[in-house]
Length: 49
Image (cartoon, rainbow, N blue to C red):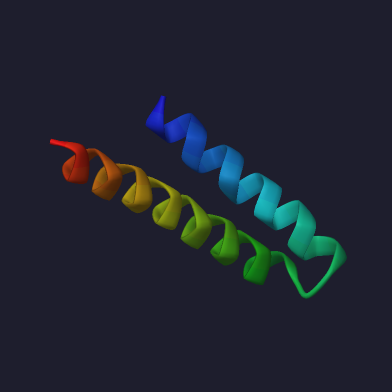
């Protein structure tokens, strides 16, 4: 499941980047958004325990 989520974020970022700044910038941005999303979810779970 995790691999599919990473692929989705990277593909969406790549498609958006293709039409705006550049393909690789979009892919990198998609990966960073995914990392931030997972980190926020992890820290939120730690805070509730």
